[in-house]
Length: 199
Image (cartoon, rainbow, N blue to C red; front, side, top):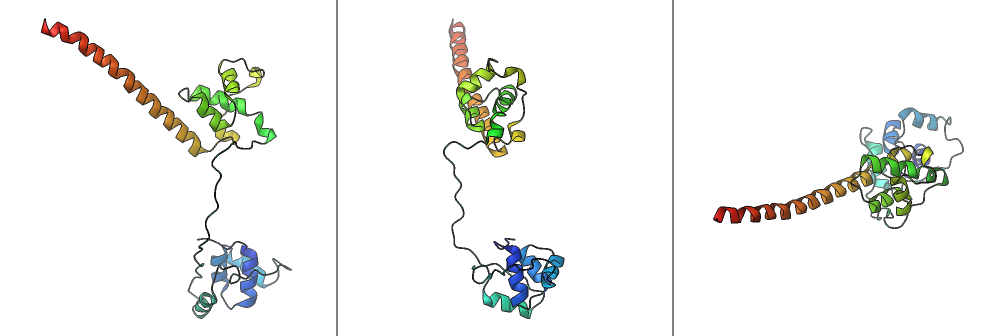
């Protein structure tokens, strides 16, 4: 269940301004029941200003009244008509300075573990250049003696979804090119056998 944007502040407001049970408030705000009781006893969130869930369009006054009348009822958050956050898809990712030195390790792991990946796919996954990939591949990188193949997920340089998608795309491409290479060879064999059969 979705929780309010500011759960503790919302819980403070609901404790101060409604007769809802601690359980109802805890379930709505995603807090523990004892934490809501501590808010009511001024042991937690002292001095915190309450955030009205009505003002922030998370609840309606009718919904609060309905649940005040029935202690077993659960508060239901209002449906939001706002669009969700847009994730940025295009463009290079920023890699912190501390993680930049880990890129050759990730490249070495990808080259060793998934040789079917193209340089462009590795560059997109790790966020590096084809020159660096070529130098790691032919072992002429300036820091080659210190490079240890390490998983790029472990280093935080790519996501599982991106890695599995790249590996699957490389496997599809390899299977497609393998099937295309077998087809002319099979046709050549059939053509070679055909004159021998007619003779």
